[in-house]
Length: 220
Figure: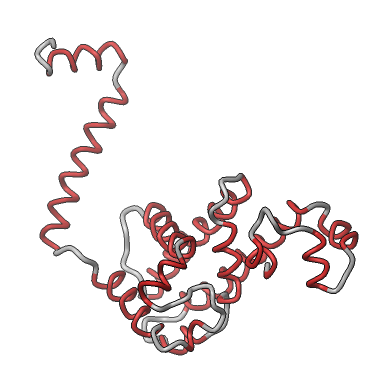
């Protein structure tokens, strides 16, 4: 994972991994079958580590010691690997993201039960959006560092002076939201009406949908 983080996926070879590990390139291929096998093993390790860390955090009630949770080293050394591989448009990355979303959905459900997370009508949808937003931060980590002074790929990021302020903003956005309750309620009603109209049109036969569009447009 350190090699992928340093060199990127395209430039990381079995030889570079072997040199870093102090073994032969043949031994790397012997254990993992191919470089794709190495990637798969790395992905499985990352997902497993994030799962252990987040399950532990979510299983504790709302009176959890937040600062202690933030200081836990957990998955921080893995962030450089994720930042390096996520930009790839490949089936491997798609599987990795899908696994992270599946786990996030389980975390959200666990968080609701423990009193940390607000219930949601669409738990899966929320898990998708939060996962994509979080992973997007890693892909754009250089800009995050430029604008906030926080390097999310640094294993020691929790000890940097600017991290507490950065984390505070994240909790504020996720916890308090941005829009007012009145505006959010109105927007959700209007969006639900749009979604219902779209579902209705999709469920109609093509001929019926076409004729209704002509009628609505005045035959133009």
